[in-house]
Image 1 (cartoon, rainbow, N blue to C red):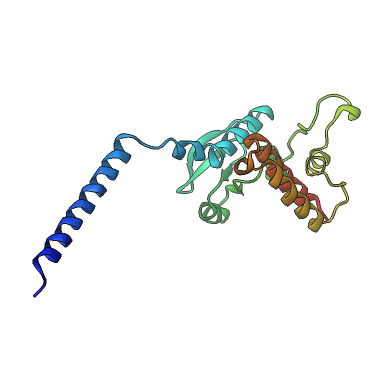
Image 2 (tube, rainbow, N blue to C red):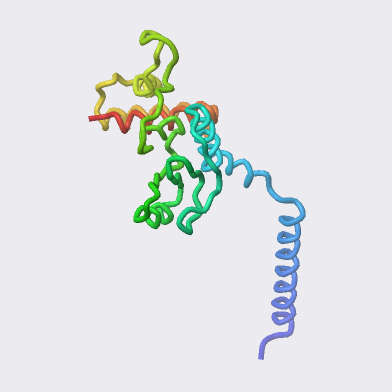
Length: 192
């Protein structure tokens, strides 16, 4: 029905394809890529570090990776019965209970957690007198290069321009890029 050379060629190509697949699977298990761990440092793990530092700075006792109301949360403040989570499903499941749930986005800088907590938190924006105090909102607008009274459209435009300059894919610095993203988040929340 089919020529012998065609059947042999199909079997041979299938065998070679299977052999290549086995080599790739074995190689990825024996020599895992370092890019997986590098991308993990930018999202939730970075926010966890910032939130941990913030809660320690305000002197709040906390437990990490805790179960509250049957839900896994990133941080739990036992004295205040507050659960801090990155998971929206856990947030909504806890919201109906006596525990206060706080949802934190991966893009939200850790220093802004105090704005979401259901109790008064000390101002950590600067130490000393009012002249030396740094307003995080003013700093965010300054990083983006727009005046404090800028509109949302102006903030977005400035953010796009700054990202073109500092994005790591375009030769920029990863830390500077992260700072610009955090400034954008802060400035966006302060626009009228």
